Image 1 (cartoon, rainbow over the protein chains, first blue to last red):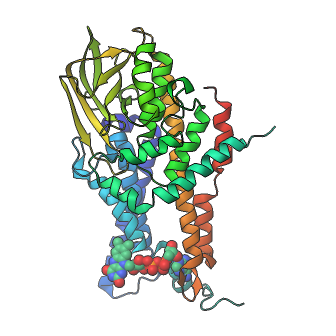
Image 2 (cartoon, each protein chain N blue to C red):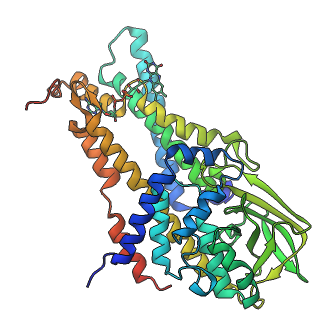
Length: 129
Length: 287
Ligand SMILES: Cc1cc2nc3c(=O)[nH]c(=O)nc-3n(C[C@H](O)[C@H](O)[C@H](O)COP(=O)(O)OP(=O)(O)OC[C@H]3O[C@@H](n4cnc5c(N)ncnc54)[C@H](O)[C@@H]3O)c2cc1C
C-alpha cells in the first residue's frame, strides 16, 4: 500500500484522524501547563496525566504507522526496503518500555486517582490472612 | 456433538510439548535465532521422529498423513515455545502445494525429503496478497523472471515454491543459475524471510499452467490459519508466564496479582475464546 493507498482505507483514516485529535489535545494541554508553570500555579491533575497519556499516544501512533506500512512494517535491523531506518518499529517497542519506565500506567492511574482526585488509597502492605 | 480434540490429537500435542520442554529450552531457542539461517537441522530432524515436518505428507511418502487441524495444533504448540522452525513453509504450504498441484515426479522427489526433515522448501506467496516494491514473478518458456518478497523459511530452503503473476505454482531449486536470495531481517528473529530474485532461472511449473489459482487460494487460507494458531500459541504462553509472575512478584508488600489493575489486564489479554474454540472453528472449515 502506498501512502495514498493507506489514506484510502476508511478504518486507517478514521484512526489517523482520532490520533490527530489526541495529538492536538496534548499540544494545547502542554501550552496550558507551560502557562501554569510560568505563573507559578500548581497544575494538579492536569500535570499528572501527561506521562500516562503521552506514552500511550506515542505507542498508538507507531502502531498505526506500522499497520499502514503493511508487511514492510515488520522489516528491521537495516533490512533492504526498511522504511525510516526502522524508526517506527523501534519507537513502537521503546514506547512500550516508556509506558513502564518512570512508573507504570497502572501506578500512574493510582496516583491520578489518589493524589489528583483524592480517592481513598489502595490497600498497601501485607495481605490480611 | 463433541467439538473438542480427539485422544490422538491430545496425545500428539502432549508428546510434542514434552519433547520441546526437554530439547528446546529458551537457551537453545536463542542459539538457533542467532544463526544466519535461524534453523537447526538436528532439531528439525528430531521433530521428524514425532511426525512434525511430515504431518501432512501421506504415509506412502514417509509422513503421517494427518489433516490441517493436526498441523494447526502442532503450529500452536511450536509457537508456545517460540521455536524457530520452517514449519509454515516446509511442513504446511509446500506439501499442500505438491499434493494438490504436483505430478508424481516432484512429489516423489520432495515429499519424503520434507517428511524426514532433510530438505526444506521456501514459499513465495506474498505477491498474491499485494505486490510491494514492484515484486512479482513470471514464468516464460520454463524460466522464471522477477522478484518475490517476504519469502517464507527462505534461509534454510533447498528449493522455492513460487506463485507467479499468472497464478501458476512453480518450483525452482536453490542452486538454479540466475537465482539470488537476499535475507530480509524482520523484528521476528525466529523466522527468516527473504527476497528472491530470478533472472531466467530454470524452473518447473507444478501441474498444468493456468490451474494453480484454486491451489494458491487454498494455500493462503491454510497459511492464515497456521499463522493464527501460532499467534494463539505464543499468546497462551505469554499469558501463562504473566500469570505465574503475577503470583510470585511482590510489590508494596503483596503479590502484584492481588492488585485489581493487574488482574484486569491479565483477564483482558488472556480471556479470549482460546484454543478449544479455535480448534472447533478449524474443524468446520473444509480442507
Ligand atoms: C525504558 C525504561 C527505562 C527505565 N529507566 C529507569 C531509570 O532511569 N532509573 C530507574 O531507577 N529505573 C528505571 N526504570 C525502571 C522502572 O522505574 C521500573 O521498571 C518501573 O517503575 C516498574 O517497576 P518494576 O519493573 O519493578 O515492575 P513491578 O513494580 O514489579 O510491576 C509489575 C506489574 O505490576 C503492576 N503493579 C505494581 N504495583 C501495583 C499497584 N500498587 N497497583 C497496581 N498495579 C501494580 C505494574 O503496573 C506492572 O504492570 C526504567 C524502566 C524502563 C522500562
